[in-house]
Image (cartoon, rainbow, N blue to C red):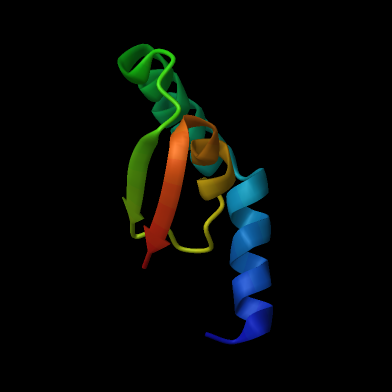
Length: 66
């Protein structure tokens, strides 16, 4: 992928309401489901630019593939 396109996609993912709300829903679900477990391994299939990976990392080990 062209670097300019990658950065443009990341900007959209970090500012568009859809991606922000989607991330918040996923994080809240994991907080309720995983409780205080910090040694979980998470695979984000279809991670795109990896926008959500940093937020997921507080739950354990995170890997992303697109």
